[in-house]
Length: 277
Image (cartoon, rainbow, N blue to C red; front, side):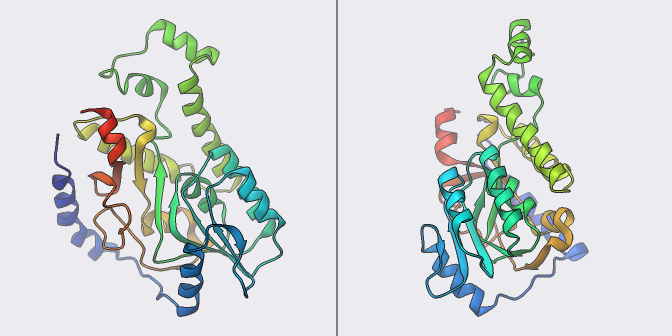
């Protein structure tokens, strides 16, 4: 198996030049927000932090959780940390957040649907220094590539094509549904589709350069400050120095349980083990 070290060495060699050209300017952390975030990261569920007017959303994105969010009183801000959830369900939560219109703090893990749907749907965002923001899966992969991904890049058979066209290939239906939801959601939020296209393409390139393939949904792509700024612009009201790539010292939680295949692309070790490469 190709060692992940080569990818990281390459990234480190390039990083000083990239930073020198366009170094991001980060806001300094503030003690009040740090204390609130620390409390939220230790509080599971969806609730008002005791003694404050701040909502803590520390949960996956499923109907029970976001409906509870909808029932909470008006808040001065909402802290969001989430491992993600179903993309279609996350669009429902995004609508609730639009209606509430409260400033949001992205802290801790913002994974999968949190990064793909919730973050680009917010209007006033503070990215906290604890944030780890990562997209789940090569979402925008076309059908022919998706079908042959674990079949030595073989073209789809006529039967496979017919099944996909008629909606009988359940795996592809799920894959296509994710892509369609992303297009519709980002258009509705006035965010360029390249927000997800670029990350999807980056993950696919990294995966093709690696000598072990897993299911397209099992790749993860980190978002950095430049990407978030480019696509969300002045919706970002504050941005602290959060994890920019797998080797970043701020990336503390995921190093032990993931394998990097490029500076910003990784696979969870259990998924890599299941691939039996």
